[in-house]
Amino acid sequence: MGLIAATQFLYPSFLFEIFDFSVARMVHINALVVWMLYAMIGSVYYLLPEETGIETVGIKLGKLAFYILTAAVTVVVLVYILVQVGPAEESTIWLINEGREYIEAPRWADIGIVVVVLVFVFNLFATAIKGEQTGIVTVLMADVLALAGLYLAGMFFTDNISMDQYWWWWVIHLWVEATWEVFVGCLAAYGLIKMIGARREVVEMWLWIEVSMLFGSGILGLGHHYFWIGTPEYWWEIGALFSALEPVPLVAMFVHVIYDWGGKETGTNEVKGVAEEKMMNNSPAFAWFVTNAFGNFLGAGIWGGFFHTLPQVNIYTHGTQFTSAHGHLAFFGAYATILIGMMYIGVQGNNGIKKMKATFDSKMAISLITIGVMGMTVSLTVAGYGQVLVERAQMGATWEAYFVSQDFVWFVQGLGWRLATGVVTFIGFVFLVKDLLTTAKSPRHVR
Ligand code: HEM
Ligand code: HEM
Ligand SMILES: [Fe+2]
Image (cartoon, rainbow, N blue to C red; front, top):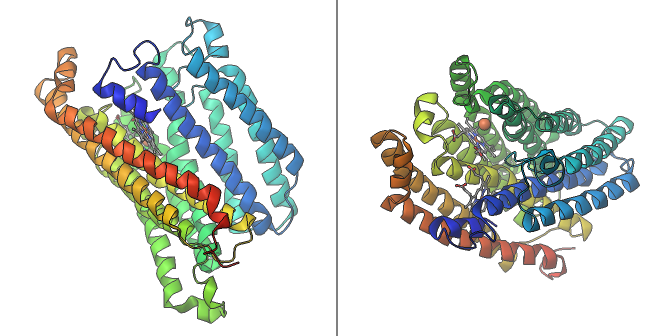
């Protein structure tokens, strides 16, 4: 879907009125959110028995919820692709889509999603209360409750667009910059203990620090989306101050992973007397976790926090390809990477592999995907820079300015490179799928 949308930027007549840009883009970003939520739920179910020391409560119900959700998602996507748009009446919101970027699912599916997520939250809480409550599980419980609750803010409808956007941002921003980041903190903690035998006391201490910092800056950092949507002007100051602080926890998360990694190399293993092969028992997963530490810092911290979060800058960059550059690197760097890492941990566990090694495919996957997404990010940044200069600074953000900048050479070339690097990303993705499906059979791994 991303490739279709990227092609349409360069050749606007491509699939015109058959599968328009607006539809391709909608499917692309909704699918993004959905696969990540699946992977997050899957990760929790995977780590829960290990952390709590007991079997997960309500497994049957959880499986049923999985099939119901998958059936519902299939219907929603088929409607997106085949029906595409409705008559903009109440029935459209109920049956086709709600028109809220990233969470466009129609109302019937919204309600279904809430029920399915309630099952998940119930299972998590029931298991955690019955079993042992580690720091990781305790943070997860609070986080998942907030994450699920926030979805409700994107479910009601007002005909005032400012109010609608005001609440809609609660889902998107408070997800990715608060609750999802805390979630990633939990996964990083779990993964470090599991893969390199990092000390739980150290890892969980970091987790608590990160949680307090992430919530401290992330919640009011929401203000950076309230600059231009008709909310009161005090959001300029609040948004500027708190979102400028947001990179701080991201630096902490980065340091944390690197520090624990170093700690391991300098011999914490000997102290605990752990066998040699436990030093690093899952190379592909660990590679993705390290990419996560870098990607989160770069995509969210640098491309988000340093580049365009101040209103003085954002007035020029708002809604340009610059935003898209940040969106791609942040979603990829902060979430796609670590969730793929969790998939490798899952493949390892399910197949009883003691030490999982990298394969040719796993190396191709991580290299091509990372190079591809970095390439897309840089290309989009160049395109966005062209827009900022021509459309905003020189021509003063008029209607005409927009169209002039769309033909500007940097813009067009930037989007050309985005398509090319997008193809690289896609090839990497094919390697990744192949590797995840076949690597368990590889004789390289130690069993
Ligand atoms: C992993 C975490 C993050 C993800 C996944 C993420 C993702 C995104 C996405 C997809 C958008 C575009 C929203 C739209 O459709 O309009 C966006 C916008 C924005 N993000 Fe982030 N973001 C993250 C973290 C951050 C951080 C830490 C900051 C700054 C401290 C930040 C600052 C911004 C700003 C200022 C905008 C608005 C851009 C505009 O005015 O067009 N983001 N983010
Ligand atoms: C084959 C690779 C990909 C291509 C060609 C591609 C292309 C696109 C295009 C054309 C858009 C619409 C941008 C606009 O409205 O100006 C888009 C939006 C988006 N894509 Fe991708 N994409 C790809 C992969 C990814 C990946 C791997 C992620 C994250 C893990 C991602 C996350 C997003 C997000 C968050 C948006 C919304 C950005 C915004 O509104 O600012 N995409 N993508
Ligand atoms: Fe934000």
